[in-house]
Length: 357
Ligand SMILES: Cc1cc2nc3c(=O)[nH]c(=O)nc-3n(C[C@H](O)[C@H](O)[C@H](O)COP(=O)(O)OP(=O)(O)OC[C@H]3O[C@@H](n4cnc5c(N)ncnc54)[C@H](O)[C@@H]3O)c2cc1C
Image 1 (tube, rainbow, N blue to C red):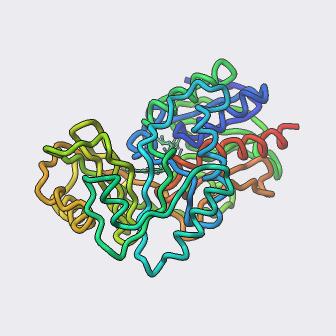
Image 2 (image 1 turned 90 degrees about the vertical axis):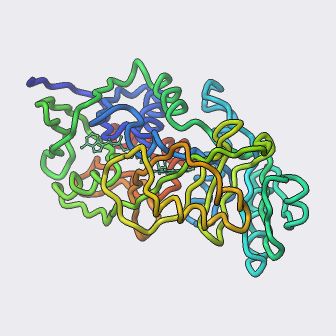
C-alpha cells in the first residue's frame, strides 16, 4: 500500500500517553493521525495495574500526579471516563522515614484532597486483611484507588474521534524531515503521514526512531509483572491499594476473591507481554508481602502477567526538541505513567499545538 495522509499532528504509540495527547489535540480542534503497531493499549498500558493517587515520591512527577489524579477523579475532561475505584491508597513507609510520610500527607492536603497518616494499629483496625507490623506508618488517601487501564484508554480514545484517524497494526519505521524540521513519518506498510509535529510515545521503540534524527533518548526496558492470588476467606471489599516503599511490593483488589500483587524489579525485560509468571517471580512477590500479607505465601496463583515499561535513569519527561523542530517525545515512565497520563497528555498537546501554528 502506498498512501499519503496529511494532518496537523502524528502520534506514534497508542498507549495511554499517546491516546491522552490525541484527545487533548482533538479538543483543540487539531487533526491527528495515531499510529499503533499492535492494538490500542496493546503495550504496557493494557496490562497496567492502574493504581492512581495524588501523593508521589519523585519530585519531578508531583505536579503531574496531582493534576492527573484530579482529572481522573472528575472522570476526564467531559465526565465520561470510567470512575476511579475508590478503594483507598495506602503507601507504607518504615517509621524512620516518618518525615517523608508527613510531607506526602501535606502534599495531598495542598491539592485539596483528604489524606492522613496511619500507624500499624490503625491500619489493622481499618483493614483487617493486612497485618502491618509495628514500626510501619502509612500515607492513606481515601479517595485514591485504581482504574481499569485498557477500558479507560478506550474511553479517552472515543473522545479523540472523529478528529483522530487511527492506524492500528501499523508500525512507524521512519521519521521524515525537511531541513531542520520534522515533516512526518512513514510506516512499514508504505503509508506516509505528513505533519508539522510528531509525538513519539512508543515506549522503548521511541529511542530507535529518535536516533534516526540525531535525538538520543537513553531508555531501557524494565520488567514489571504481577500475580493474581486467590484470597480465601477474607473480605476483599475492605482491601485498599497498597504500595510498600520498604519492599517495593504493590497490590490491589482484582475482584471480590482475587488480589493482584507485584513487586519492584530491576531486571531488564523483552519488549513482549506474557500472560504467565515464572515460579521465581511468584516467590519474589510472596516474599515482598511476607510481613504485611502473609496469606499470599499460601494463596493459590490463578493468573498473572509479565510485561515491561520503558525506563530512564532520569525521570521520564515530555520534551519538545529544537532540532528537528516539531519533534516531541514522551517516554521513560518506569512504572508510573498511567497515573500521570492525563496531565502529561494535556502538556504534550499544548506543546504540539504551539508547533502547528
Ligand atoms: C504490569 C504493569 C503494571 C503497572 N502498574 C501501574 C500502576 O499501577 N500505575 C501507574 O501509574 N503506572 C503503572 N504502570 C506503568 C504504566 O502502565 C506505563 O508507564 C504506561 O502505560 C506507559 O504508557 P505509554 O503510552 O507511554 O506506553 P505503552 O502503553 O507501552 O504504549 C506505547 C505503544 O507504542 C506502540 N509502538 C511501539 N513502537 C511502535 C512503532 N514503531 N510504531 C507504532 N507503534 C509503536 C506499542 O505497541 C505500544 O502500544 C504499570 C506498567 C506495567 C507493565
